[in-house]
Length: 191
Image (cartoon, rainbow, N blue to C red; front, side, top):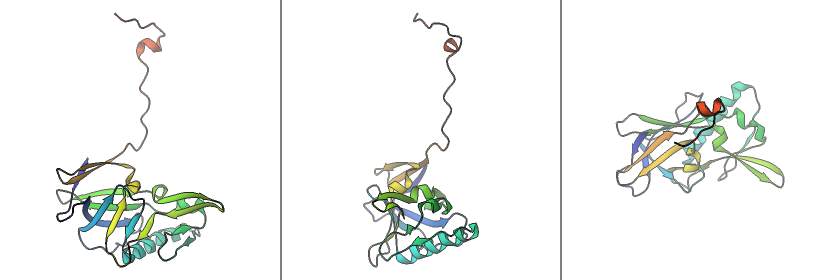
């Protein structure tokens, strides 16, 4: 488990954000170094200032172009981007978010497209929305919903002023082998 300290001056689960990157794109997303980011257990979206959200969407689109697939994203002011075809979700790149750890190194989490693209059933059919939204009008605050970090076990330790991040099991483990007595079909009796 890697720990990220809470930022001083905040009474919330606010930590330092080092970077946001689109996997497959080397273009850095413009951020102030060690920018505060709220890890919000009650939120669903990744809320970003307009300039950061716009740069992130440009980077996402630039990784789709080389695939040769025409992925149509509908964007509207104040609304999350929406895929015109939900099958295109697989062509979107994962997002990589790096937090500042206690020793100054990076604690990096990866948010795959199946996590940051939410499928909704509507009367008109399926709707796939990217869980990326602009922060409130004019705000520079960044917050990430714990829903987007569900691949990770988060350990909130307010008394130690930190959040622990641990990747959950990536590959399901095989069931353990049967006990020898059961393999040989012998009866097991208590002694």
